Length: 245
Image 1 (tube, rainbow, N blue to C red):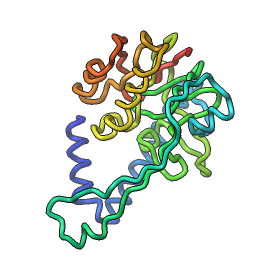
Image 2 (image 1 turned 90 degrees about the vertical axis):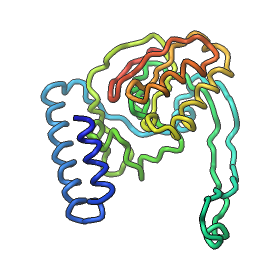
Image 3 (image 1 turned 30 degrees about the horizontal axis):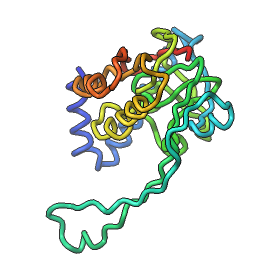
Image 4 (image 1 turned 90 degrees about the horizontal axis):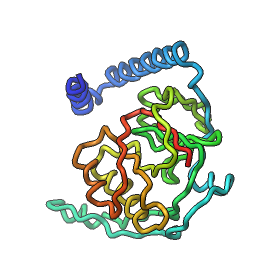
């Protein structure tokens, strides 16, 4: 079934998405699916539905003052433009340097949090905490597309339809992410977290929560790259896990 859906999406993106009627049909189908999914959640497990206010990690840290370990300051990076093999000289002349504002790096300990496989949100203290570079006001996350969260009209808060917590752990390190299945995202968003963790003291025996739905090579790379023999706990997509610390 998964292969059929994957092939169907590939055909849609490559051939059909250019036509308005197919784009409209996709939006109608998604709206009907989300409404049906959320109604089913309310009927079967309404007590697990909860609302949260969006907050970046920096905002949450300033507001709640959780225990943190400072790693590196914020920085403004200016990178040379990419070199495109075979591109005409005019295109290369127009290429501009890439400027990126990188937020500061910290390890933040959040008590009583819930994390979800395939999601970049940490649910705690009434907040849906997200990375600083994720912009819920303008970006639609995979969880929103699939109907697992519903964002309000102002895009400042969300309602969670992830369902009941699958398991509870006394403590764990969150290496989950909404784009962890993409190799480029894994290399730039997940692997650096592991490097930061290895460079920090006090977390040598903490288990690692890793997305179980991503490619086996990326899952195994976590064990290979980790400098400490930490337990690795796979978390399936959309599976909530509660962590006391």
